[in-house]
Length: 439
Image 1 (tube, rainbow, N blue to C red):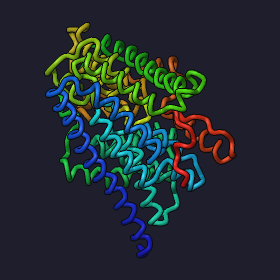
Image 2 (image 1 turned 30 degrees about the vertical axis):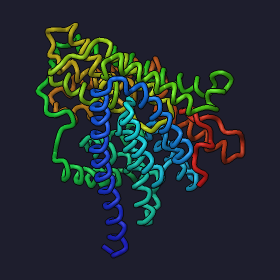
Image 3 (image 1 turned 180 degrees about the vertical axis):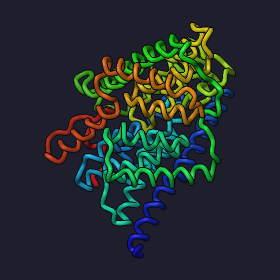
Image 4 (image 1 turned 90 degrees about the vertical axis):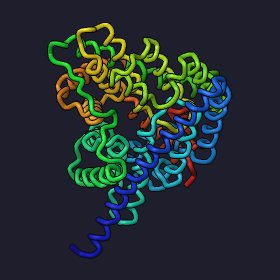
């Protein structure tokens, strides 16, 4: 009850509340950014061939030269930072400058039609904010603060408090840490209260009455198998493309990252225009419409969106894969649902979203809880769990290592090589140690 203890608590709570506020403002700005792009493309259909390559190349250049460490999802950086002891090295992955750059450049990516989400970036932003709050409060428990910030980011971004906690334990920490459990819980509650106070207690995909029973075992099995194989295939493709950028043509691609980003932008424009604009942006609207039964996605949507998300993930711009992955899962569910007319389409779509997302992140509990909370569909909990378990098992056969942890190891190797004074290997986004801030 001492004044010093209360000061530390208030600073910690304020930091968690700030994560919630930033997540809400980021979400609103992201929606406006992609709607602005959609409006512009509706008026000028040729615009993506100009704006998408140039905008992505500019974003990659700024990320490389001005805010290095901001590239990609942000979750691998947060995971890697938990294993770094040196404060200077930790600031190269989590800092106020990176947080601001992450927000602005993710918005630029959405303004250009990249297939990215804001949820992964919110994890890195939340971890950065909580590190600042912990430093001001003198807590000194940096790994726990990073975990709490990441959990608060997921909770506030989706209004999914349970998913935030499970994501921190299952994916970021890969274990239950008793000493940090209270930090995570308090941060999630504070950030969640701020988000609810500003946006209300909403479900991300709205309230759905979709459900499946055990008589729909074909849907449960099919979504788990297809989702797991497709999710593992996506992770393999993402890591393979990253490797080709690092080593392709004798390393010449890695020396010209802006040209790589320009080429990825051209490919994204072609895919987007060829699919009638369906693959641009987060994919939230497509997933929501399919889940509600308002529309059925064409068969080519899922593979096209998967490829667009992989290209967006390796071109060197900030942006996550949460929302696009859920959208790919909805596309898969739309196809499987068409093959199983006796099963409710909404329920099949939910199963596919869980199956594919679990296949990508290889975190079945997180996938189940996040989709359950986002769609307010607790009645489907057990079928979703079965689909997620099947998907995760098959995904690990295709891609033995989680994509987030594989990329986190790349960042750790890069920082260790730099500390040892050795030539730095390229990061999973094709960048060398020169891309990280010097302080």
